[in-house]
Length: 153
Image 1: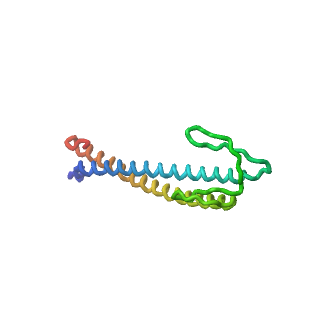
Image 2: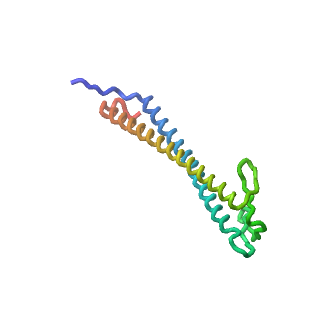
Image 3: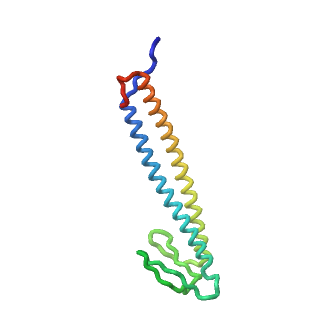
């Protein structure tokens, strides 16, 4: 009987291990990006809800204005129908309340589309990782079947 099992190349196994590790790092980076996108989406959604409630009351509105570092003050909103909106690259524009809401809704739509693309990328990488893991496992099984002289690499 002829043995058709080829010896496992330790260099190939090491390369597969490296690929698996690199893909794992990529998944981690993309997962962090996905988390940032989700946080931005939630922040924009909260801003929309706040903008909808601002100016709805006939009474003068007092809000809690946070400065950072745990410091806040109570502040009166002087012009509830005018919103200062950061549109990127430190560019701030003044928009009406409904225009600001529309802008934020558009941003949420963009973030959702970006998040979907990132999630699809993560899924593709995980599929590749699973294939590499199967190849590594098959290599170890071949090495064991071939005998102890080839070891675990």
